[in-house]
Amino acid sequence: ANNGVINLSTLAVDGTVALATHGNGAATVVNDAGMNFAASTVGGALSATATTGNIADSGALTITGTSSFATSARDATIALNDTSNAFAGAVTLSTAGSSGNALIDNGTTALNIAASSVGGNLTLTSGHASGIIDSGTVTVGGNLVATTDDNSGVIDMGTLAVAGTVALTTHGTGNATIDNGTANLDLAASSVGGNLTLTSGAAAGITDSATVTVGGNLVA
Image 1 (tube, rainbow, N blue to C red):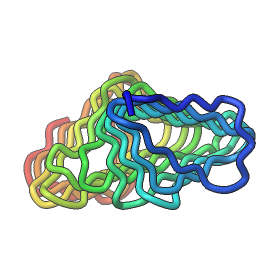
Image 2: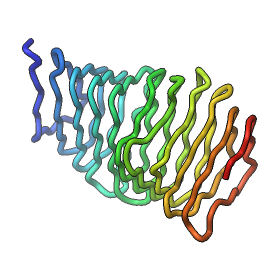
Image 3: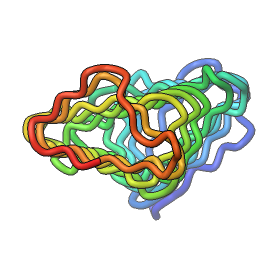
Image 4: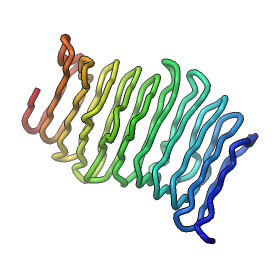
């Protein structure tokens, strides 16, 4: 009751972590090892840190506020791939190391990636019509894979800094807009049902390393 919060910053949990807060109560959890989320519902913001291991889910996460997921160990990963996940607010991701990959499946909810730094690859999926957007600089040391898998969802990521390749897939007539800032933009195999708009400020500019299929118009 009373919008109560959860603040557990010195955990040593070997099993799963299930969270439930009342109203707009927030939750902060820091575990000494990895973090395996069971089905959880947080009415406010969620902040989760795994000190020496990976972050994963074994049940759906329903988070009304913003979400922040961080792994402290080099090459530790974030894999939140339950297709019933619902991160309503912006999601912040932090991993270190070239194998520090991050994967977020937001089910049928729009996915908003806030300022984030992923050392490895970043894989994003949403089935909402509003698709996948960013609201801060998203730095990716490896490759970016972004997919909308229903409702002609769009991809609109205008503050990227991806060092590797970018692979895009949109459902139906979904458009895709990518701005890779001052980094060169290398498109891997992609399929965009609608229009594709690409921007790069690097001298190496915009290239492709596999077939890029566009159902609508290309602007580069």
